[in-house]
Structures are given as structure tokens and as C-alpha cells.
Length: 139
Image (cartoon, rainbow, N blue to C red; front, side, top):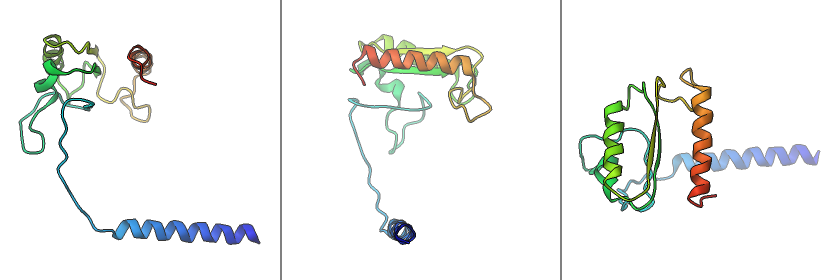
């Protein structure tokens, strides 16, 4: 009986917490950062706007932290020419960054829950990522 009461308490507590989160006031703010600790996902180039005044390619030559990029060569969302431009921009700096472009590999090749998953490329990317973290003292 104690177990049943405990479950009811947990359920009620969870529902109450969920409701409190759902009705809390919404606020928004613009967050700015410098290039230290910067991470990105996706496109490397784009039009500047108030929300995205700079893109990765714009800051590549001045990066101080190394970046590992793992891209699919047949990615329709991130064209090869922008990946190649990013590689060139990174070479103008001294961050020690590296970009890998997997030929004939679609966007989302690492996501094993998508039809675009590519086991061989994903396993290679995972090994490279682990080696990258070890090399740069992360983890």
C-alpha cells in the first residue's frame, strides 16, 4: 500500500511540476558570445542578420580553439563548395581545425534512427571524434 501511495505522490508531483513549467511566464533575450567556446551545427555560410551577424566561415581564420567538422559529401543542405570554402578559411588561421568530407554521404549520416544513416561513415566519424577529444584533452 505504501508503494501505491508513493506512486500517486510521484505522479501528482510530476503533473504539478509539469503544469508549473507550462504556465510560467515566457521571456526572451538575445545572447551574444565571442568565438571562445563557440560551437555550431549546420550551414557554414549565410546572410547576416541581427540574430546571426556572423557565420562560421566569417570567424574561421581567427578561431583559437580547434574545431572538428564531419560533413556528408552528398548533403543537400550543406553544399560541398561551402565546406571547401570553410576548409580554406580555417587554413588561414592557426586553430588546428580539421574538416572531414565523406564522399557520397547524405545529411544526417550519423543519426542511426534516420534512413540517411550510413554505418561505415558514422563509425569512422565516431572514432575520429573520440581521437579528437583525446588529442585536445577533452573528457
